[in-house]
Image 1 (cartoon, rainbow over the protein chains, first blue to last red):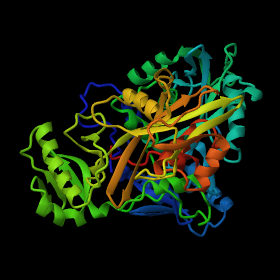
Image 2 (image 1 turned 180 degrees about the vertical axis):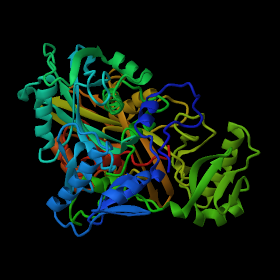
Image 3 (image 1 turned 30 degrees about the vertical axis):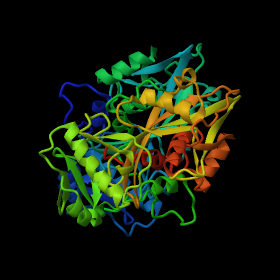
Image 4 (image 1 turned 45 degrees about the vertical axis):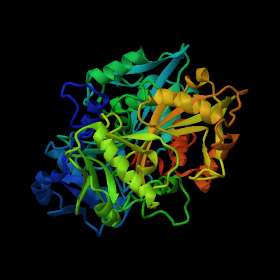
Length: 300
Length: 300
């Protein structure tokens, strides 16, 4: 199965649209993958060309033609996590997974389901496990116009260096609530004090699935709107952001639509903001297709 | 193919959730249908048990085992509309389509595509043609709390008599823009003057597909938010609405979640409002599934 192409066939090839950004987050070819299952439940996707290495080097994984399964005798969260930790260590040794920082992600059948094990964040795409994150739209209301704070990612970040980003965005590790993670990331990434961060409102989410060299990313983002006072200025605190700029919404829309300046998945968060705040007219020929495309991956 | 069941299998059977309302709008069994095509493009769905009657009584339709096609020799909008008009007239004669009021809907491959023909609204579900509508969330901001205007449909309406509804909602006929239709429906259904109606903002949409005795409804709704002044009171102007009431958002949420008081598709419009205005917490176990489910039909 080839990933959904969101562009109707009749569209002229040079017509630039928000759907291009959505399509870019949904490029994948599942025929190259088999389900990865734990305790009888499908929790991820493994690429077939990795079977050889896994058969040789991952004794806790049962590799068959149409599934890779973690040893079913591993019956506890801890034993499963330890076994997968050994596999990840071997992957790091051979350079298949790049060590970055230790951050553990839950692995289960959905975001809400009891995790079956935990695994290093960097190894999550290798196993095609769904990861989740929080993204915050930080905006300012100036009379009738909305402006949005845009972050430029540090040039030395391992992923998407120098790309544009939401004011605050972070992965959702195990053992912390969405709310506490939001308050923590607000402080770390943009020096937003807790009492201000608390005012962020959950307003929806986006889902997508794309393939990288590292593997498959079938992810979900919880999105928040945070209206900021006109005199507040975000400051990078942890070195992940190079600078912040306040843009009129029309400019944000233009850059998202016409360029690839934003980090891939941030485009979806911003397009959702544009839709929700009336910045895309309902008679845009792609309107319902955009609204649908923003959460087109259903494997959650 | 049986319609998507949005409830994860692990959910206890008595757990009431917004997903139940979404599932109710998506019950269908496409295996009972074949595509209905016009000018080589699929534009609807016809139920197999209607083939016999169509073969006998609809000379302009080519009925085969896996498709019903309008005579390809009909090459213009007008000739196709006339031929389909004859079929609809015969359907009215035998009581398969109930005459109601003349209102013509466009038929095409998508909302934005050039219509291939026009057809009476009442016959749209018989042919499984996608219909579109506009739904308005009329709300009032009282300090920190939101309140929503709820309409109760007239008891003598042919569809969903006495059910709860959005303050303004209407189908989208051919030959009028979404914006003009919105202004017109605002005046007709709730006596909202044009200058106030203009302030409605497009904020997204919902899609769904459900089956009724009449046929298939694979529909899309364009949704708008309209903030109303505290002293404005909607008044029914065209007899479609029995009464209006202003409810705190918490009560709206409760009634949508726990009852079937709302007209089927209005539930989705209201749930989308609740999501966008932060009235459903992001850690609701169904959160991303709700957001996705609100536009789960992709045949647009």
